[in-house]
Length: 276
Image 1 (cartoon, rainbow, N blue to C red):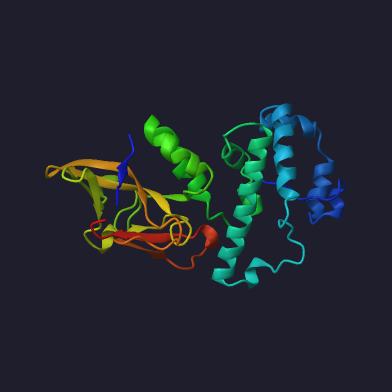
Image 2 (cartoon, rainbow, N blue to C red):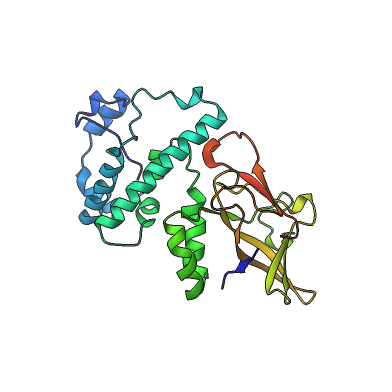
C-alpha cells in the first residue's frame, strides 16, 4: 500500500414573535430594552449585509432539507451510543448534500467554506459532527500542504467525500509533544514507499475524531526515517479502509475509544500500524 508524504449557529424560529419560541421570558424582556439597531449589529458580525444575506440563504437551505426536521424525534439523551452516532452521520450527510447544492447554485468548487464559516454543523448535529476533522483538518491540509499533482488527485475526491478523512497526530503516549511522537514512516528505496509502523502501545494514534468508524483516509503525523536517519515529524496521506467495503486494510488496527463525557458523536478512535 502506497503512503504519500505531503509536500453563527442557526436559530430555528418559526415565528417572528420571540415570546412564542422556547426562549427564557427574562431574556425576551431584556432584548426588548435594546437601544441599538440589532440588524446593524448582525451585519457587523457577519461582515456586511451581503454576508448576512448569504448566511441566511445557506441556513434556509439546511432548515428546509428533506429529513432534517426534528419533529417527533427521540431526544438524544434517550439514545444509545450507537444510535447517537448513526443519527449524527445521517444529519452530517444531509448537510453535505445541502453544501453541494449551495456550491452548485453559486458555481463554485468551494463547498466547505460555508460549513466552516457559518459554523452550521453545530446547529445541524446536536453534539458534534463525525465529519468535523474532515472539514476542519483533512481538507485544509490537502489544500495548504500538498503539491499541485497531489492536490489534483486527492482534493476532488475529498471534496465529494469519496475520501472521508481525519487528522491523526495525538498518540496514547504523546499529545502536544510532537517531537516525542513514536509512529514511524520509513522510506523503502526499493519500492519507493513509506512503511508506517507503531512500535509499541503508546505509539497508537489516540483520539482523532471520525477515525473510529467514519474515515477511510487520514493525515498521519509520523517520524520520517530514511537511510537509518530520522528527519523529524512529517504529515503523510494514508488510506486506512477499503473504499468499497469500508473494512480496515491489512496492517491497519483501528477502532473506537468508547463513550466519553462529551462529544459523543465525534467518533473518536485509535489507529495502529503493523509495517503498513
